[in-house]
Amino acid sequence: MTERRETGRGRPPKRTTRPQNRKPMSEAERWQDGERIAKYLAHAGVCSRRDAEVLIEQGKVMVNGERLDSPAVKVTSRDQVKVSGTIIKPPEPTRMWMYHKPAGLITATKDPEGRATIFDHLPKSLPRVVTVGRLDLTTEGLLILTNDGELARKMELPSTGLERHYRARAHGRVTDEILKDLAGGVTVDGIEYAPIIATLERTTGTNNWLHVVLKEGKNREVRKALASVGLTVNRLIRTVYGPFELADLASGALEEVPANRLADLLGPEMKTDRMEEPRNSRPQNRRPDSRKSGSFRKRRK
Image (cartoon, rainbow, N blue to C red; front, side, top):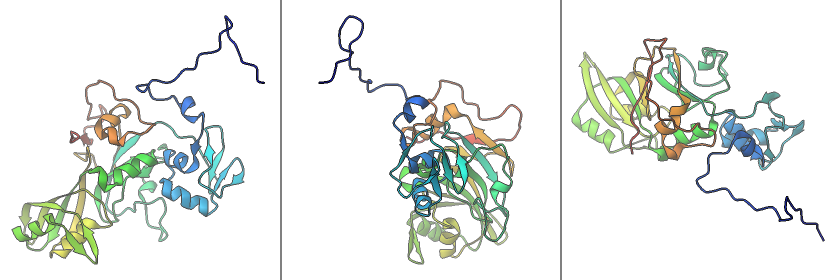
């Protein structure tokens, strides 16, 4: 028979439950019961959960000196986690940056062909980050970076409805029929592309500048879709991703999004445990130390 623990006046301790409208857990509370290793690595900005499971299958993940063979293992901030021999620090609060990617850089940590990557040009003081989607070698413009792999994955999914806006310079003749075809969705090499809203901005000689809006990010989607209707893209600039806008952020420049604005900008469907609660503060789209910066758009309901 177990002895019942008593308090103060001989009464058993009260069982307490957290109210449903409780405040977000503190870091200490959140790690108390541990977190599955794949989610831990995603939160730490190492990779997506799916990629974390692949790393485990490849035997590249170790916890407290033991190599893992299952993604079901739970870890806490007290455990030592290594990926390919590198110690992974416990996840920190969500942070996000807007980066103006120049043309000629690969969106990857390493390139087998030895070409320059965006990470070769980012500040060394930047924490471990992942990109939200990719921009190919010759595409320039807005690229979102975050230390929250789970958030990055959510933002990439077409189901979230985040718009991507591009300015495309294309060679060829633009007609209303072509724009209508794009708006109805096209199929290229057996791959179906969702409707693309394209509008003609101006024509210069044999080139046209188009404003292109889509809600998914398949590999080289804009180039392939426009090519299918006879337009050859020779310059492509991403200007918007969801609520984030390139505005006049200089090429190669990096700007952090205020942490207390992320939840409000992205909406409740994008909320993660690590995201700071929004504050009632006046939006500040520009840094006081810079004349050129990105900006934010109103989130669509």
